[in-house]
Image 1 (cartoon, rainbow, N blue to C red):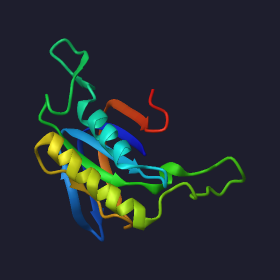
Image 2: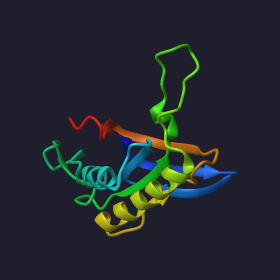
Image 3: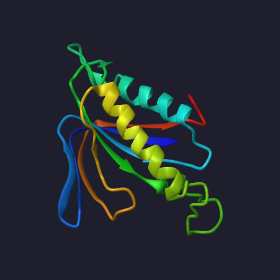
Image 4: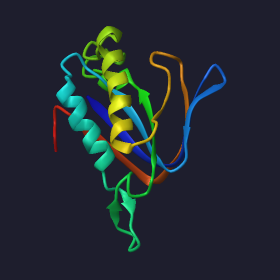
Length: 150
């Protein structure tokens, strides 16, 4: 799994001019799922996301987590995070999981994040043509890959 986490002051997703999810302070998370991903990857990543200390404390240092600031998550499925760009100019997406594998893991991630945050997680619609709007705070953007746990 790959996640792009953006610290935001607000973010929203619309599909067909209807808002499917919106948050104020928190994380806008793009989530890519590949065929090799497991429930263990999901649980590890959910812990990382909710525990990520990238909000400022009273001294201006990144010491506070999402739960410390009562933040929210907007979670968006993003198969293009597994774009292969080595050959040619048209990206390939063969590493991205097909919907029959990706949808259950995406839905499980929504539930796991909600449990860890003890609140609902806002979302887009899997596979839809989504329009994302956000104000990146900082800007702070973090990339996490469960295959490369740095």
